[in-house]
Each structure stands twice: as structure tokens, then as C-alpha cells.
Amino acid sequence: MTPPDVSLGDTPHKTAPIPYVSGEKPGVGHYEEFATTPLEFLHRAYEECGEVSEFDLAGLKTVLMVGAEAHEAFFRAPDDQLNAAAAYQMMVPVFGEGIQFGAPSEIERQQLRMQYQGLRYEKMAGYYAKVAREVKDFIADWGDSGEFDFYEAFTDLTLKTSTHCLLGSDFRYKLTGEFAELYHDLEQGLDAAAIRDPNAQNSAYQKRDDARRRLQHLITEAVRDRRARDFHSDDMLEIYMTATYEDGTPLTEHEITGMVIWFMFGGHHTSSNTSAWTLLEICRNPQYLAELQAEQDAVFAAGKEASMTTQRDIPLLDGFIRESLRVHPPLNAITRRVLHDFEYKDYKVEAGKNVMLCPHVAHKLPDYFPNPEVFDPRRPNPENVFALIPFGGGRHKCIGNAFALLQVRTIFTWLLHFYEFELAQPAEYYREVMPTLILRPSDPCRVKYRRRKV
Amino acid sequence: MGKTYRIVVDKGICQGHSVCVAHAPKVFRTLDDGGPYPLVDLITDRPGDDQLADVELAAELCPNGVIRIVYED
Image 1 (cartoon, rainbow over the protein chains, first blue to last red):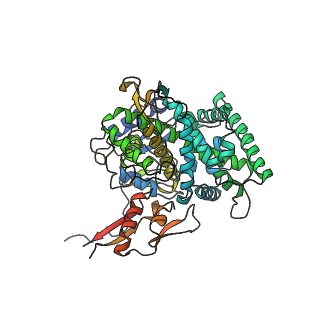
Image 2 (tube, rainbow over the protein chains, first blue to last red; image 1 turned 135 degrees about the horizontal axis):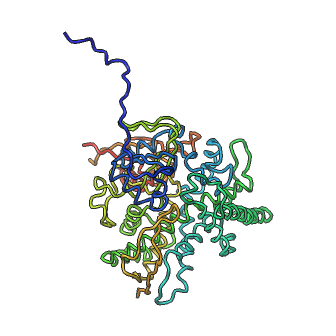
Image 3 (cartoon, rainbow over the protein chains, first blue to last red; image 1 turned 90 degrees about the vertical axis):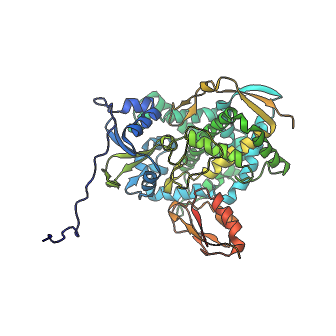
């Protein structure tokens, strides 16, 4: 006789232990390896343990999740379970208290609505002309041939394009080298140690705080100047100056500065690095050059060089940019703090730990990207939208992603129409390095250029 | 007769960029539910043949890959 079926009620869910990465050291766990060679470490974690692995960043237990299915679970989890704000507190001294993750989630939501106002599709058309004008000025004195540091050049160019779209022509043309230095100082405050304690006493964090104060001074001057002249413009600063919270309160000068820094941090170095990698890959793959040039020449012939183009106008260039984002994603530690136990398949990640995604690891999975080591600008996007995550995903996905692609496309439509490029060093000299939280090519980033005969 | 099709949108990954609204305004709109951004909403999930080209463009250009077209025989 069979026993009565007792399995209909709740049975305790059996969870499997999360595979643990080897090589931890007493006291610091895997922190030293993560801080010095983060990408190598995260690849090793995946190779050793698979889809889910756990490691210890000096007491902060972190679980790496890899693959479209895991990404989807991560991105669809509610914010009160997998929380971005708690995981990104190192951004608070950079943007300022009371801004984004330094504010209650209710305020953050309203601030995000304000950022969104400037990134809607209908706003984009006006940005093309501004970016095009900057690129035109950028190459105006290049002459027939030469050599340049493309990392520095794209840092400079995207600072100008972003500032132009963000803060308007009036501010942009008063832009001095000081502005770039201040952003640089802010960025230097974002090292691996900031994940643990962004308020530690050291000279880098002191410079970060000084830069934040100075930026507030400069931006506040611009705001007051506009108000005194009753000047209005079609840019983000106008939006910040006129936006109100739902209770009718406008943004303070401290908050306006924070919104500017937030926007710039989202869009500046990510775009400059994507431009740098795209140029490198164009040089490394000369077999596509004639077709790339023909594509951009057609944009100019149609008179669309300063207006909206889509991936239908420039499919090969678009493919180069997307593939550069796949192979060399700028941001490689997308993190959330677990506030309530988080279950994925047979695993349970307990509250208090961090969960992390790493695009650099995920974008090399052969299941989604056959022959992942091959740079293929014609590679189709994977069916599953969670496989390719250079901009993150879900509620906190980078809302500037369309703006970023617009900038990089416009930059290369112009560059490829007027110039040809060639690496100044052997291809293997250009390596991936990650001195701050953003992946960049190693120095020296030299490329030669020669004017095309068109 | 052309292809019949229906549209499926994943609101969970929409951020209201409104590219779809610009390209196929008879099919897509956005609704503001007070979240960080308005979200896509379908005016109809079975638009006619005459809308297919616009819907395909909207799906292709959506920055978040929100729109899926299901072709039916």
C-alpha cells in the first residue's frame, strides 16, 4: 500500500551551496585580486564556478551571476529586494548628498524623471547638430596628416559634446581646461576601495570633495547668470532650472550641480571610451574600411551629416559600435545589495550580500555569441535582450543609451568621411586596462591619420 | 493578403524613450503611471497591414528591445 501523498503542502525548498572562488586570503578574502585585476578575477570566478559564484571583498560577500537567464532574474527583481542605492554609495560624495542614491528612493525617482525629460526621443534631433558642430571644430586644424592620442582626444571631444548638449552653448564656449581637471579629480575618487568606504580619509577623496565644491561654484555661476538675463535654452540645464518636485519645490543649486555631475558621469567617459575602442577596432579590421567609408559618404551625400541617422542608414558603423560595446564594455561591475534573500534556481543569496553582473564576462559566452573572441561588426544581436548588457538593464538601465549611441555615431560619420586611420604601434600594444571603474585602452594610445581624397 | 501579426511589449524593460511613438503613432503611445518614466502602451496589438512597416521600424529602433512582433500564418 502506498502512503498517503504528503507532498501537497509546503515542503522546505532545498538550496544548493553557491560555489566559492578559490584563492582567498585571510582578512581580505579576494579583495586584493579584485582591486588590482578585476576583469581577470571575474573571468576566473566564472571559469571556476560557472553561472553563479561567490567571493569575499574584504568582508563584503559578493555573488557573481553570469548569463542571460541570471541577468534577467537580477534586473527584474524589485528594488526593495536587489537594491542599487545601497550598492552604489561610493557615488554619493561625487554627485552630492541628496542626489540619486544619496536621496530617498522617492526623491531619486523624481530626479530620474527630470533626467529623462532631456533624453526623450524628440529631444535627440537637436543634439545631432550640436555633436556634429563639435566634431567639425575638432578636426578643423588637423591638416592633411598627423598622429594623435585618441584616448585623450576622445576624452576632450566627448566632454565638449556632452557639455554642449547638457549645459548649452553659452557654458560650453566658456569651458576651460579646469572643467576637465575637476571631472578627472572626481573620477579619481572612484577606485575599488570606494566600494568599501567612500568617506575614508585620503588625498584622492579630499581632491574629489574639493572638485565637487568648485564645480558647484562654476555651475551655480552659470545658473545665476541665466536667471539674471532671463536666458532660456534647449538643454539639460534649462530642465534642471525649471523642474520641480511633485510638491512644487524647485531644485537647489546643490541639487542642480549634482544632476549635472550625474549626467556627465553617466555619459562622458563611457562615450569617450566607446569611441576609443571603436576607432581601435576600425583600425584593426581594415577589410571593412571601404564599405564603412561608403556608408558615411552616403550620409553626407544625403545632407544628413548633422541630423538624425539610425542603424538603417549606417548599419556597418552601428555594428562596429555595438560590437565594441560587446567586446570592451565600459562598465564591468553592475551591482546590487540584497535586502531580502534572493533566490535564483537552486541558489539562495542571503540578505546583506552583494550580487554582481559583469558584462565583460557575459559578452564572451559562446552560447549567445558564437566565436566570441572574433570581432564581427555584422554579428546579429542575440535573441535574448538580457544577453548583451553594456548599458545594464531593467529599471536602472542607463537612460542615456540612445544619446550615447547618437554621439559615437555622429563622431565616426564625420571622422570616417574626412580621414583614414592607422595604428601607430603594433596591434598587440593596445591592451585592456581598468585603472578606475571604466575599461580603457592602455597608453600610449597613438593613431595616425591621413585626409581622404573625396 | 499580407501577413497577419500581433505585437507583444515587455513593459518591465521599457524606459519610455518613445521611439515607437515617433515612428508608429497609430499603434504605440506612452502612459505615465507616476514611475520614473512613462511606459509604452499599445493602442492596438493587432494593427493592420498598412502599419507593419512602421511597427517593424519601431521594434528595430527601440533602444531597449521592448517590442516583439509575432507573425501569424
